Amino acid sequence: MSRTKSFRFLTLALLMGLALPVISADLPKVRPEIVGLSTERLARIGEVMQKYVDEGRLGGAVALVARSGKVAYLQAFGTLDPRTGAPMPTDAVFRIASQTKAVTSVAVMILFEEGKLLLSDPVSKYIPEFMTTTVAVPDEINKGKKGPGYTIVPSKRQITVRDLLTHTAGISYGDGPAMDLYKQAGIRGWFLADRAEPVGEVIKRLAKLPFDAQPGEKFIYGYNTDILGYLVEVVSGMSLADFVRKRITEPLAMADTSFFLPEEKAGRLSAVYGIGRDGKAALVDDPKDAAYVKGPRMCYAGGAGLLSTAEDYARLLLMLQSGGEWGGVHVLSPKSVQLMTVDHCGPIYTSPGQGFGLGFWVTKELGRNGEPGSVGAFGWGGAYHTTYWVDPAEKLVVVFMTQLLPATGSDAHAKLKALVYQSIVESFEKR
Image 1 (cartoon, rainbow, N blue to C red):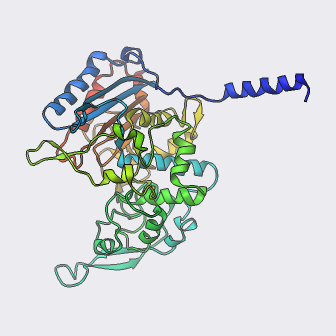
Image 2 (tube, helix red, strand yellow; image 1 turned 180 degrees about the horizontal axis):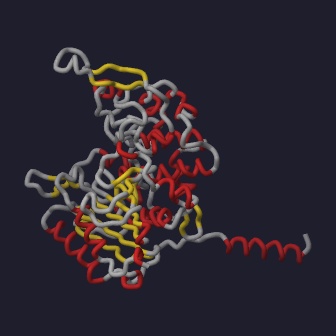
């Protein structure tokens, strides 16, 4: 190759490299007034959350509010771990449990966009064990008498990918009529990350158990997204961890989001609290912690396995809020995001004023539940009392991270929602 051609080739390669999207390690931050929020009013979030900490109702937390793609509020409260006395940092790592479901749902939609699956496809097309499933119907005649108390009947139709995304497949966390069979199979509860086996083995055994309702007839929260996580593995040919890393977290610069925590990051993992006998948050010796840091690291649970930080998770939400793109990285099409964030369930999702889309609650009627917001807002949360929501009409993204399990009697989420919306002094809906 001549010197001239070599120079042209290197110049072209350099230009192509410069054209590649590069996402900053830090989210853009701005003075609240620039994006129509009030600094003074946002400070009320800190006042209330710090009071929760002082009163022993929370051990620690991180709250993030972004608008128009920029972080206007990011504060930490309380302690990371009372055993060390270390204050909670804004980059603390949290167990996000069911907030994992949004990530797995995005992974499914990526495969949908690539033509590798349809939402109407039967799950058995990819996981043959779901070809013939059954349902446990409570038996009124046998109630209070000897016998299991239920009758196992065939499913009326096959379960589809969309059934799983909308939690209408009839699949619980093993707490339905046939819970005795789930106990025998060793499949109960949402936590799967401590298993020394691939998630696919769990899902194959699950498929043989009777479910709680006929497909499409009820909204039942359960292993649906864990099944989808295994489906992603089958369709993509890689582990769920690798797919999420290559297609979602690395492109969005979510450097602290993973299924298991590298030991060098263990010092940033928030302690878990529960509610003690005095009604206050007390440190919990959570046996699940060993699995997150030093466990088998074999079972990638698409329903509740990830760890993350407030800023990392905000990146995922900013991508969804902006129609599937963030920082020049197109993860999804705007039409796919639109499909994910409209109601698919109708009357079988009974939360007042809300519907359920492909992984999220969706606000349909403002005012039905007495909470502020906007029609079209969507979100979810996790077992450790984490929560998030996106309000496209107000270009708003909110993340709240804490570790309280169970969060019996806590009204922190409702207070946070009121405090966030009262901080808006310029509404985008009126523009």
